[in-house]
Image (cartoon, rainbow, N blue to C red; front, side, top):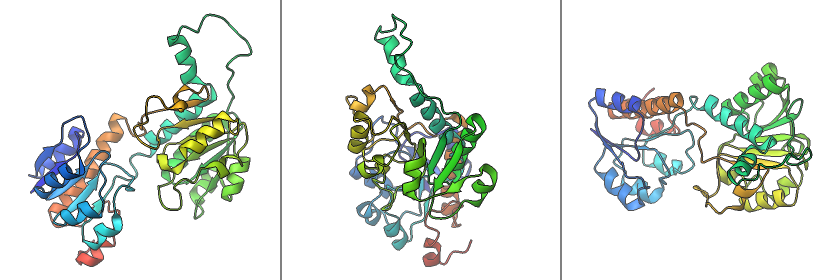
Length: 330
């Protein structure tokens, strides 16, 4: 049995695959595979681990319908045509749970960086502009006692809210499809409408999946409802916010600032105007970039492969209904 991996992943995952007797081929070039290259490599493999920006669409799936599993080195699965994979009886696995703390830390970092214009202040030093003290220049805002609005209060959103409550005694509002009773008990969080979330939050942090419902959710119509003193944070997926509308809102003072770990497109162009704005902090999608978290992600991705290649149900399926078609019990 052979697995093709679209990037270099941590040794923790490779060891698990090796110990299971699975042949490994890793893509080691510092560029993304073309769709044709991915198909060619996958046709020679029994399983693939996707670690990067590859799109798994209907064309790919029908060209590689022999695959026993597609294992994602990520939680997000918006680049995979899940419906087509299920139709073709190909299990798709992801890495839930293990990314929550690291991603929440990144959201918290961005909130603080934006509130104190930290990235801009650093650039002032690099540019030689730190030469005179001005008591009223480049002032930030303090988060203590502010209202945090979480859009998508799952595991990551809960971790972000827990940090904000513990550090800054912030009030927590959230908008979900369903109540998060754990957050309501533990953090006194209150579920509100999307409109109320926008109007009453001082910091809004997006932690939802990308779907037809959430794509471009934060557009001009959303930003105009937010406070002019508010901060928008996105560590989920870039397409959840409309980047042109966000730029306009920042330039017009409709909102105060923004912190992004995800952009649309990715990677962001180096001449993007967001990178020059004082009240903006942008990171290159590093939400899960810690040794502990990436090791855990590689391990789970490998576990999904090992299970599938041994004819077992994978432990972390995105499309569990695929097993109804395969008549494979849990």
